[in-house]
Image 1 (tube, rainbow, N blue to C red):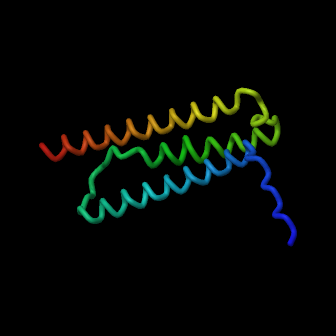
Image 2 (cartoon, rainbow, N blue to C red; image 1 turned 30 degrees about the horizontal axis):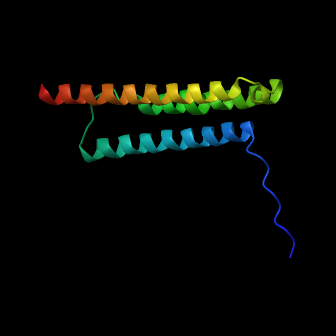
Length: 113
């Protein structure tokens, strides 16, 4: 029986593609949740729910640009890429959390009026 082939080490460009896919899926799920929630509550007014565009624009589109730039300039092989990658993702999580909290607070004030 032949020995199983060893998996290649985790490459940084694969990490970027995976993160791009993850954020795209998350943005679509958030959009679907918002649409179905609005339907369920017969909501037809304007909303401050901005987490979905932030995830799609700052996550998916940004990492698609990083993928293209990586092919041209080998960004992922740079020594500071790992620090950039995790710092950017932490900032994206904080941005989405802030936007979600602001939308919830705005919804609570709208209900009270």
